[in-house]
Each structure stands twice: as C-alpha cells, then as structure tokens.
Length: 412
Image 1 (cartoon, rainbow, N blue to C red):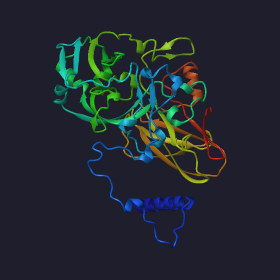
Image 2 (image 1 turned 90 degrees about the vertical axis):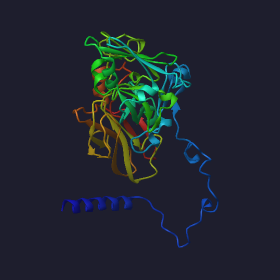
Image 3 (image 1 turned 30 degrees about the vertical axis):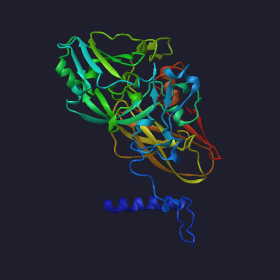
Image 4 (image 1 turned 180 degrees about the horizontal axis):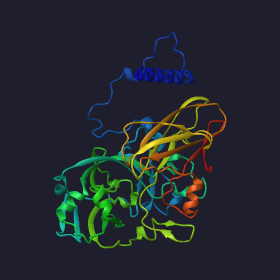
C-alpha cells in the first residue's frame, strides 16, 4: 500500500505541475524539420577536447572589478544560477588568487617535500604520489569571504556574486595520513605548514587533528587532472574548511609545535568581533544554503507554477533538511533533497511553488546532521558584529517583485 500511495502522490504532483505550466497546444500541421536534420554535423576529431554549445557562451565565471586592485590578486565567481545537480564543471569553479595562477608548472619537475618534526624527511615526485592507494571524494570548496560584501546590507545583486565563491567537485588523490605513515610524524608535532609554488608562496598553518582526519592531496578534479588555476599538479584538500587553507600548487609540508602565524592567518582571514578583538583560526564553513532559481539572474517568467531550487552545504557534515519560506521566514515548508547526498558536499534541494503574481520573499534554511541550523542575518550580526567579512552563512532573502524581477534584500 505504501508503494501505491507514493505512486499516486507523485502522479498528483506531476498532474498539478502540468496544469500550472503553460504549454502551447500542438497544431494540426506537421512538425517543422530543423536545419540540423538536413546537414552533416561536426566530425568526431573536430573538437578533440569538448567545448560548450555556442548557445551557452554566457555561462562563465565573472568578476567584480571594485573588489580588488588588480586581477593578479582577485576572484572570479561561479555561475551558480546556471548549474544543475551538485558538481561544478572544472572550468567554472571560482578562482581566488593572491599572486596570479601558476600556469606553467611542469609535473615532471614538481616536488612535494615533507619535513620538520618527522622521523624521515621525504621528497616525492608526482609519479611517486600516483603509486599510493587512491581515493575519490565529493567535497565543496568555499572562500571564507563568500558573501562577506553583504554583511552590512544587501550590496551584491545576483546569486553569482552573493554566493559564487563556491564550487563542488569530485577530488581524486591520496589521503595525507597515508604519506605521513611513511614520514613518521613526531608526537610533538601539533601543526602543519602547507606552502604553494605560486608567486604569493601561499602558506597556511593546519592543526594536526585535521591533517590526520580527512585531509587529502588531490591531483584530479572531476575525473581529469587539476586545471592550472585550481592548483595543477597538486592541491591540498581540507574538506569543509575555508578554501584559502586548501593550498594550490602544493610544494611543501612542514610539521612543528606551533602555528606559523602567516599573513593569511593574522592580518587576513581573521574575524573582527564586536568587542574589538579578532577571532583567529576559525576554519569551518558553517551550515548554509541559497536559492539559485528564481534569483536576480533568473527572474519569474510569469505567474503560475515554478520549481524553486537551490543548494545547501555544511563544513560540519551532511545536510539533513532544508526548509523554504515564501513570506520572509514567517512560514516554512520542507523541500525535497535530491540524491546523492554526501558529507561536506553541496546538496541540491527542490520545492514546487505557485506564484500568484504578488510580492514574495524567498528564503531557504539548512540543517545538518550535527544539529547546526542556518542563522538569520540578525542572529549572525548579534554573534559577530557588523565589521566581519568572513564566514557569512546567514539566510539569504530574494524579493520577487510583481513584475517578476528578483532583488537581493535583507530581512531579519
């Protein structure tokens, strides 16, 4: 009976959706023959590396010029509004550089050194690393400053700019703990320094607990070798933690007793608190979600049925629930979570909506398996004050206007 009830319930939803969706009736005339039916297509070797359709040329990373002084130390944003599922195509993953992307590292010459408080200092070639047991995992990657421009008010219009320093990929490589078994980490080692081979020599301190937990070294992304702007040939992956710690172009791992207090963990990537102090080493990206359609880039085509969809994620674990509100948080309805659902990965949610043509305030609220609930903007401000930049995970509000356009606003 339960299977029959589920079938009837799904059939009812499908019928209702069809009734609310505007579909043009079929004419008596035969279906027109498209030009593509009359000419030969491209040859199989015309595009040895596949490219997107010319009709999708607007689906690209974008920048906000006023955010940084110049593009060598800048950021480009993922077009979340144009993506389906949970995997971000490698060529659309947001890029944050501090000294430009290292585009010409020869993997045959690249080396990874492990030294410091270890029993044996080791040097690995890429071929050495490829001989170790390999794993693949789906994890999200989010810049600590994602959404930080809107701490004091809705400034950025468009989900690509409010949340686009975010992507989710399948990462393939070796667990870092496997390499450390070879090196023999000293019990006195409490921190690891990760250093990149870029012009900024990006360096970050990582506590040993994370290193021995789920940290990995990745050489592939979404089934192919890393793109140069994403760290080719080797990248540190720290699932659920600020992307800045996931050091690209990884060349060195040093173990020591104390953190190294580098530029990116002192003057940068620290949180200004209301009492004038700053919180340091706050790595985990909080439980978060955003509606990606409708949004400012994807307005309403007209009143009637529309499936509302979006993404949810948590640096603490797996998303277990997403609620959606159409009235600014007064009432909430549970959304359907789309499989597969992984820990520390993006989760797609969906919910049907019949828009009556009046103003609406759309919000989503995520909950993870550790019990973390996405906060309102007022709750986040009360905890961190208005001078913060990093780790903004408060509820996003889209205002749907009577003419169908969508604006970013802050409510609550």
